[in-house]
Length: 224
Image (cartoon, rainbow, N blue to C red; front, side, top):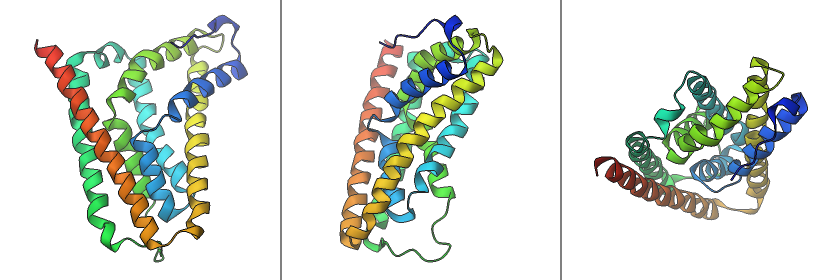
């Protein structure tokens, strides 16, 4: 259970710290975005981390606006969570299939211009959208933090401070992961690289199955 401080006592740095720490506690949890970050960083280098976060941040900015407009209660409905989970399972399965299909021809040798920045940005957006727990987090903890930010002496500026702190936690973690993977590229060959991406694809398959189960449970609850 997340314990939030008294909004009236928070200034800019207090709100930044609170949103950063709570955001980091969610960012470090294993999930599809982490698996995709490892996959992209192994070939494209450390820049894959910030690019993944860019796609993720664009989606979160849109959702933050939607929450302020009153979307929060809708996201907690079993029917909506079930639909998000089902769609997410399909997206993850599609991305995993693409990774598995490309394994025989994968190489660490990157031709000039071959590594497109749009890949990590797209995956950061889609994988976040595909995760029903991401939506539920924002509909509960995220909505609480949004309300807290608006109730600080900063007013509407507090919402921007909260967003910066939250995204900074994602950037810090995924850039760190991408840096570690990128530095390790010199120690692996193409075979090891294919095994690494095969494992990442396997994780995506696992989460696709898990999200499908989640969708089944939620829709079953809705139809009962």
